[in-house]
Image (tube, rainbow, N blue to C red):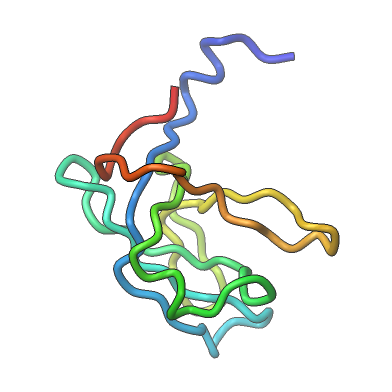
Length: 110
């Protein structure tokens, strides 16, 4: 078990995917996402292994949830700045956490 204070340390925000393209430089098939988290956080890059469930073009304009306060991580030949969140499908491939209604970019999960 963790405390509520521990949960509050994880900064999960919503952002809109503004660019999405296959990452041909990674060891595992992945998609590079450029996500707008609003004025406070700005635009961040993420590498996501979502190719089995999403085409890059269909992700443009989708609002996704991501952890924005982990340190940047080297993923193949790119630096991933945020961790995009998802749940596993029946094949253990991610289904992205999205908003059912449009919300302001940068909104914090509570």
